[in-house]
Length: 286
Ligand SMILES: Nc1ncnc2c1ncn2[C@@H]1O[C@H](COP(=O)(O)OP(=O)(O)OP(=O)(O)O)[C@@H](O)[C@H]1O
Ligand SMILES: [Mg+2]
View 1 (cartoon, rainbow, N blue to C red):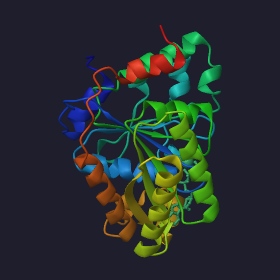
View 2: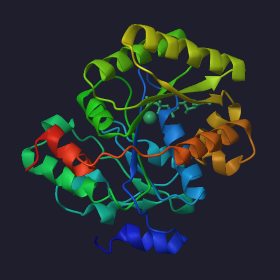
View 3: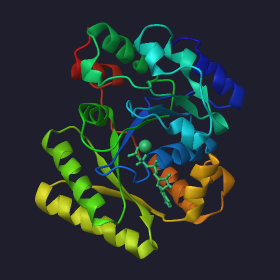
C-alpha cells in the first residue's frame, strides 16, 4: 500500500486505516432529481462522523454536483486522472469529518467511449481505494446508462432512491428490472426520499418491494425513509449539508439511522472479486 494522500488525510482526522475491503455502494435512481447527491453527501458525512473512512466518487460523469451540495470546490478532478496528469491520491478532496471526495470529470464522455489507455488508468487508480477506505460511495446520474450499469456492477450494494411519486416508482422499477435481468447488481436496497410522514414512506417502500418480489423474483431490502423537509432544499441553497447545519432534524436522524444500518451489515466474502478485478472484467483492462 502506498503512503498516499488518503493515508495522510486519515492521520489528520485521526481515523484508523480500514482493515478490510471497502464496502462499495452505488446510488442510483430511475427518475432524476430524487435526492441521490444529497443522500450521498449527507450519508458520507454521517459515516465519516461515526469514524468510518468514507470516500464519495462523483460518478455523474455528465453533470458534476457533489461539490455544489458540499459547497466545496476542488482544483483537480477525475479528468486529470483519466488523462494521466494526476494520480488519484492527488485529486482526493477533504470534506467534513475527513470525508474524501473524488470530483467528477467535468464533461467527460461515457466510460465505454474512453480509449483503452484512459480506461485502464481510471480502473487502476480507482482500485487503489479498495483497501484505503471503509465505504466507497458512487453517486451516479439518473436513469439507465452504461456508466450507471457499470458502477452498479461494481457495488456490494446498489441503493435505489425513489420518492413517493408514481413516476419515480415506475422509473425505478424499470431500472431495478434491468439491474436484475442483466445481473448487474448483487444486492439492491431501497430508500424512499421526500416522504410525507413515516407511513407514506413505509407504504411506498413496501409496495415497491412487493412488486419486485412478485414480478422480478428479487428481494429488495428496505433501507429507510427520509422525510420531505424544507431544511434539505435550504441546505442545498446555502451549500451546507443538512447533517451539519441541522444535526437534530428528522432528515439528519434518518440519515444517521441509514448510516448505522450500513455499518452493521456484514460484507459478503467475495474472494474472487475485488474492485480491480470487477472493473477489469467489466471494461476489459489488461
Ligand atoms: N428530503 C428532501 N426534502 C426536500 N427537498 C429535497 C429532499 N431531497 C431532495 N430534495 C430537493 O431535490 C433536489 C434535488 O436533489 P439531488 O440533487 O440530490 O437529486 P439527484 O437525484 O442527485 O438529481 P440528479 O438526478 O440530477 O443527479 C434538491 O436540490 C432539493 O431541493
Ligand atoms: Mg445528482
